[in-house]
Image 1 (cartoon, rainbow over the protein chains, first blue to last red):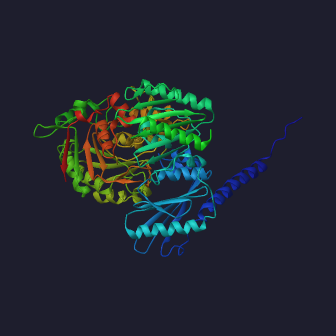
Image 2: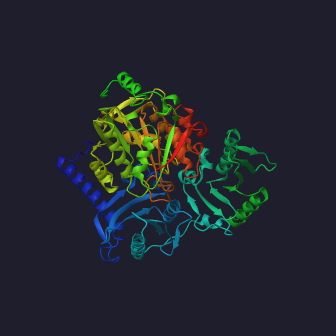
Image 3: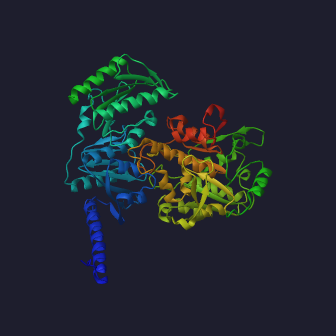
Length: 311
Length: 314
């Protein structure tokens, strides 16, 4: 049978349809985010300045040159950026990121915030720092940046954030793994949720050498001066092989001193600054405690987490 | 190659002013990196502290012997400030750039050129464009097209055997690396070494980031090695680091937690300068794999006990 070939006209038609589809898709995505931006007059005297910018998928590298990877690690879809100004010339930049799901939005929120910020009741969690504000809600992360630390700018950040929050008719929960860490003596806003190696490596230089092919992880600080990490793997094969890999890499590394213990499923080491850490593997999980803590306390923490996850 | 002056001639001229320098290939020995002050004192790094960043910049360069030591008369000078983002603590401050341009001109520079792969909007948003215009330097906006870049072999490269440096760079005689030190999600720290990615073709820079970086930690180490390889073939005449106010989280783009040591750090030894800058936010040079690799591969001295640091108040 003779194969059917399309005429030049139909090829042009298909091409036009394709480009139209792409353009409409882009506009639809853009609209999905710009609808959350307060219009001029909706946030007192803060007005939009210029047109919103829009970046989707890999195009994020154009906006965040050299720093887009962490967003992709957590699961980035697209972002819109809009500037606002007030009559005295103060400016605020608003970025609305749509992430793949609420866990991703929560994760990048924990990556971008720190313990010293002021906790706010906006969205799922919110924090105001010296000159910027972050909050997450559903699968959305909102970052507002002022360009000075004056109260006028900070008031603007709050006004605009509340305006966006009111437009975001979304909900979503924090990842379940977050609830498994001990709540007692937890340092407020110290939680970090990881979806990959960049987030983890940025949480502490301790992780600079190791392979951690985990599914998700979480870290929190405690007032006694230690941090607890909990990493979950796809299966116990992976968690045990990572544990063995970890032991091997630290045993071979000149800057770490590994302490042998009778228990094969816990090991202790000291780094070159005499910082102590304990590591344990259990089922599909690896637990780690780092800091000012002794062996017995570390074991108690590991047991608490195991009870909590019910493995 | 588009060098305005030959390598041999340039070294000869540099030797005449007591300093070996420049847009050359190969390693800077640590002996070369040490700067002789007029009184016979040797110093590796100068650090000027103060709230007037323009004045601190001038003091930190004077402490090394002044700009004339690095910029010969009638030289064409390339500056590479960081203008990646407009968020506070993420870009080299305009007053620092302005002070450097003015010092270069006073030293007798024929041209001062600010090189960038970014667009004018980036420079305007951070206030850098106005500072450059006011100080009388020229912006060189290099379009990210292959034709604007030159393939440069990296004979000692471990991860990269070739980099792609902007041709415009080679139209200059002197290169001043002007990063802001700050956090970087990719490898935790950015400073003198990582800033050089701002001269390299974006497509080539993307090779620094392997496709499997999300699952293979070796790919993150690959980034550090690529940066070190790039530094083997591009050597700054002088480094002037903005460590006045910078982000220590959520880098390189910000916004993030700000540290405000109010310091300008100058010198030639990139590893030593980067190692010093890590200490300004509670780290050590050894914590940063890129700095360790740079030290191991001969780019400079990581052990700050062996580095002569001169601290001054501005």
